[in-house]
Length: 115
Image (tube, rainbow, N blue to C red; front, side):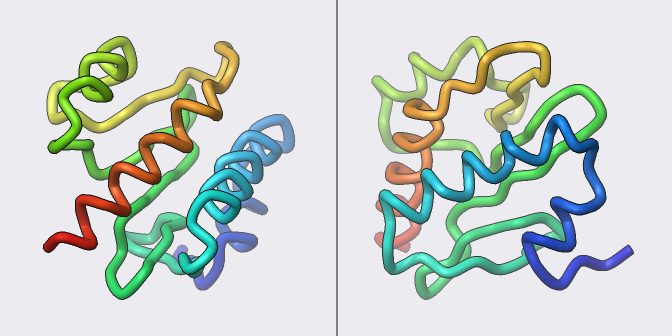
């Protein structure tokens, strides 16, 4: 299935996961008011001239892409959530660190504004 909106994607995930996605969406929108919702790689994403933040729910986790690459202190803080390529994975059975995710969104927005 190809998704055309965040809402279409959210409707396909389990009901207990939908609020977690909505929380991420609201956090990004509150921190980066100029960002607009879009779909990239068939995942919910945000753009501000270019896409800088992707997030999606999977069977056991929520993934956030791409990896932060320019903020060494934040990268160290994200270590428990980083996969081998640096992408982030937040297990559904764990509390969602929404403030940390917000800092990731801001860092990625800054990184992509420089490119």
